[in-house]
Image (cartoon, rainbow, N blue to C red):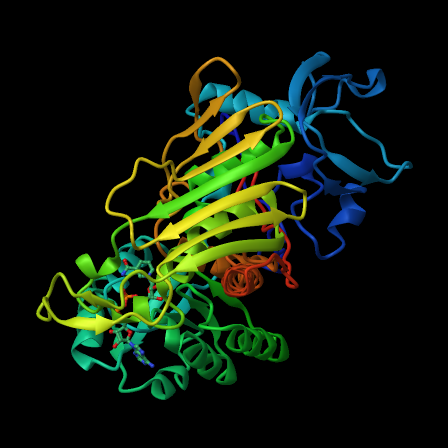
Length: 488
Ligand SMILES: NC(=O)c1ccc[n+]([C@@H]2O[C@H](COP(=O)([O-])OP(=O)(O)OC[C@H]3O[C@@H](n4cnc5c(N)ncnc54)[C@H](O)[C@@H]3O)[C@@H](O)[C@H]2O)c1
């Protein structure tokens, strides 16, 4: 330590192992909320409970009898504007009354807006999680580029109904890594060097592949939607519960700086009480660019089930779960024409509604208006806006990880600097969050419970549209933990 000018403690929500039992770790929550095991709270004499909403001015008074303690020696009482920490403490413990948040703010001022973000970058569990990919189609390339940059996961195997595609993915994997190309899902999930299955198949196959993986004792992280219907989604959740395994489901775009900065603005009370939101996804249809677009127009597809998960996941992060929906939908065209690839010009039948409009009532009372359409040639609609009693918030496209968050407090739009979210996130960040969560023994954020609630909300909206009335949404979920600067 003699040669160290400053030490930045940046490990939080970890698991203390025998190997890790000595050292300098944990600052978050005044070092009372870094570890939940091994009697750590007996050592610190306190436990973090919650952040009540809003930022406040505090003065931190140092106890006169403790001012010479080496941790605070040389400091005077100081003022700080900060979020609040409610903690349970042992009244018999001795304290220094050093407000840790003052340290965090000093660090932030000293560097970039992300100077104190290091601790929430997707971390490195002791041993990488071995991943087997099922489904080596169009989206697999985006995952590969993220997986290549992560040390928390390692690609070991791949399979696809089309063996050529699987081979191509294996060849593009990390240089020097041996990736096995397997003939079937059964062969892939039977391998000892696969800990988790990355399910990148089409929606109709999501549940079957997930169930095969869970039955073989593997965790699963899959593309959205979680399943094509509620029964399949329930079966996946039940199988995971029974086996004690994790199931994650993409929407990890909302873990990036765009949605997370917006969420932090809402949680910090910058817009007052949320009243309403709008969410618009309009386009002419994916058959323009996708070479095999039929699945988007079969059950499990359509603009709501395909694109809705981005918007609804963002809305649940921002405003909480949905309790009631109503809506209307239409199917203006019976057939669509493939616009690219070797099958360009072929037509195929449309089996789902392609223009959906709805109103969602969130548990907190806010109302979201939704338009999801594959029948709009052009539009100038915003992606997501959230309106509160004090201000309005413009939220970037939830199909992207980042983007400008703007706030209007009554005197023009101003851009909020990125203040939360995994930096440099890409498709697969949710899987890395799951790998880290497994290692740390905490819930993962892109959870199957969130995905199941989003799926149930979308299906209930379709039922409401069919029946022409408002319907309650009977499922719910916890708001996932934010990816905030301090890592909670
Ligand atoms: N294409 C995109 O831009 C995009 C973006 C975000 C999310 N997604 C989601 O990713 C998933 C895949 O989309 P895509 O565009 O890559 O589709 P795709 O049709 O290009 O690829 C899917 C692949 O899965 C394989 N497959 C299907 N069933 C299988 C099974 N039972 N066993 C093994 N392999 C199987 C197919 O052979 C195909 O290669 C979908 O859920 C989609 O919603 C796609």
